[in-house]
Image (cartoon, rainbow over all chains, first blue to last red; front, side, top):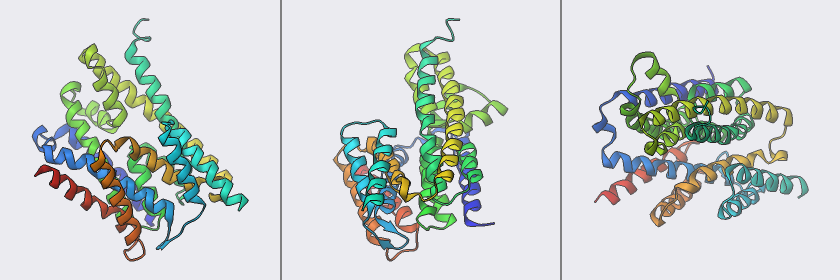
Amino acid sequence: MDTLWIAVIGTSVIAYVLKFSGHSVPEKFLSHPLIKRINLLIPIALLSALVAVQSVTTKSAIVLDHRLAGLGAAIIALIFKAPFPIVVLSAAITSAAVYNLL
Amino acid sequence: MSRVASPTFRDSLSVSITVGAYGVAFGAASVANGFSVLQTCLLSLLTFSGASQFAVIGVIGAGGGALSGIATASLLGIRNGLYGVLMAPILKIRGFKRVIAAQITIDESTGVSLSQEARGESAMREGFWLTGFGVFIFWNFFTLAGALGAKAMGDPSAWGLDAAVPAAFLGLVWPRLKNSSDKLLALTAAAFAIATTPFLPAGLPIIGTAVIAVIAGLRVAR
């Protein structure tokens, strides 16, 4: 079984176990204030790292290319409080324009 | 037929359609990152948690191994467990119904349900089920549309798909940055991930930032 299939099945199984456990475990375990706080911070760290890695790296090298222009467009859209689809679309259009025209 | 036009129903439907439409972005991004249409659709059907799905395709697309991808996605899925803790005393269900409820326990179903508090517990339950099933249907339909669309496009860069993925992550994290310490954490995590990419095996620069989050959480605790 290749990496992609292991990832699809592993992610799905653990995602479900996490969801089901919330409905089943005693409340005091998961609602500890420290667990709650760290749980709010972990997505911020992971998603920010994903933004960075997907924007300026290719394999193990730092690469500055058309994607950075797309990210800039996304930031501008977010500053103007654009809805999520507009954020993604403006990044895609800007990046594609730079990639195709330069 | 007043039940059909209830405010809870309208809230649930509008959230379902809006959020479900993001499935296009996931479907396209997943295919652009090398997953097949079948694998992409299975992620939406079985994992059914947007941030986790984007994370696993993002880590693997960046060259990370299966374990890094699964670990990153799972850390993002912990919050669904916390939602279950909130929802269980409201839903009061057992057996098969609980098995189904667990799968649709996500940001949106929990959010709409909790927002119905002023309308009473039955409205909260209605909001949970309607939004959960609604997002599930639209999210999966739009995932398939996005995956097929991306497959027909060919070179992902020519269509800007390689920039759409980080933009999607940015769109997910942006509303979470509520104060300056959140923003500092975001910038630190991004800087750590970029700086360690040339030296660490792919995937570790991302999952490693979870440690930074734990340290940040412990510091605030003191």
